[in-house]
Amino acid sequence: MSDGVGLRACRPCVGAIMAKALVKAKERTIHLALFVCALVSIVTTVGIVWVLIKESLEFFAHVSPIEFFLGTKWAPSFFPQHFGVLPLICGTFLVAGGALVVAVPVGLAAAIYLSEYASPGLRRILKPTLEVLAGIPSVVYGFFAFTFVTPYVLRPLFPETDIFNAASAAIVVGVMIIPTISSLCDDAFRAVPRSLREAAYALSATRLEVSTRVVFPAATSGIVAAILLALARAIGETMAVAIAAGNLAKLTANPLTNVQTMTAYIAQKSLGDTPAGTIEYQTIFAVGLTLFLMTMAVNVIAQRVLKRFREVYE
Amino acid sequence: MTGATAVSSSLFMPRVQRRRRSGRAFELLCMLLSLFGLAFLAVLIGRVLWEGASWISVKFLTNFPSQMFPENAGIKSALWGTIWLMAITTLTAVPIGVAAAVYLEEYAPRNRLTKLIHFNITNLAGVPSIVYGILGLAVFVRWFRLDRSVLSGGLILCLLVLPVVTIASREALLAVPKSIREAAYALGATRWQTVRWHVLPAALPGIMTGIILAVSRAIGEAAPLIIIGAVTYVAFVPTGPLDYFTALPIQIYAWTDASQPEFHHLAAAGIIVLLGILLPMNAVAVAVRASQQRKKLW
Image (cartoon, rainbow over all chains, first blue to last red):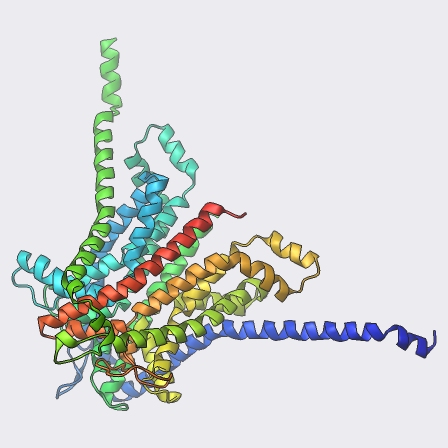
């Protein structure tokens, strides 16, 4: 085979090779672009952690962590300043705990009804309608708590209720997280194999007995994970709490009084014109870091529990 | 015979009547508790309509907010701010979120980094929105010097809803059967051609549902925008991405916080407009999902 003949024969061949190289380059570029997009999430997390830690370190250069985490008085805007975060944590848990008191029984009952009792037609309507509750903006819940729940529900029952109070915020946040619990628990209940239920029915158990003694125990980890995820949402909830719960940081167990949560503090501080670089400004980041670590811990535990429950039946 | 019955009933008492009765009571209790959520929703919507319906007018949509005269106040700047935010958020979050999902489901090798990204996205979905606001304050507002612009706000909302878009898209991609991909590969398609022309179209309804839910979440979000200092009584419409802005939920918050009761009516009217946008979006998402489940292509 002479060179000339080879070249002539391969002229279309060269084009094909170049086209192939072009396709390969395009594929590689797309691969890379997609990879970069996936990395955005990592960059976001790194950004959050970096920002919170960097500014918090400056804060902790002025305030000892012992005072911050164990101090019982929070008054960064008054002299003498106090930087004990416990009152804010107390407010947060008063609201989040109250929210769970509302959401856990309602959410669980709704999940049992959806998975064990409701006909498929009713289920198709009920489940999305319940999920609308999660789609309503929290500022709307705040408005409702402030202009309806406090004056028309709480005050007639408990006349000593403050205008701003933890209870009204807890009720609306509780309603907001009902779908988190009901949908996740419904999924957990439906993951329980039919055979378990049928075995119990064959022993002439009633639906109540099947639900509470067979389905419920089998889905325990799913229920726990759902409650934890709902708790994390309630801890991080901002607008409803900022509107309805008030902004008086104090250590109290009375839900009818004005309290301040971590999120409400951050919102209030950013609304005012706090100059950057001051210690007051840095409190936003220190409180933000505390909030972030708390929700993160609850979420990670929930994921762990959820993973275990998935492994059982898959 | 009578003796035998007496013995057996003392050993085993089925108590069928009582068990049936308590079973029925339990069913009723569960039903009533599930209806509690719906009743709450009905009262909430009824209350908002009662307070705000008479305040809705053309003037309300086309006037700027006023701190002094509630009867002349409107939501023009808030509505435009929300439209700007949505445009920026959708244009950034949708391509990035879907691309991330495509990478994770179609391209990623099964290694540590991929696992980390998965874990990370799940956790990001649980980070409180206000923390995204703090990130935006430090990075977009101060570091990138974008100030309190509508671009800062839109980018923060983009980061906030990215996990939602990615998780929903991943689930949609996961539901596309392997056989579709294998058929495309068998015909000599490259990976991208397979994804672009076969997998993505099949997953589109699921992805759309995720996008609608993500955008509706962003529309209702106020906390991170308050952190970056979005102003409340804005008397202009943003003309470019670097202008100051306000948004519907922020305006509603400001009116709810105002002391005069007239402003509460304005807040309620604003909520009617907000829910008038959000509830249909939710309905569309639910309808798309339902029709998808009924069709069951595979």
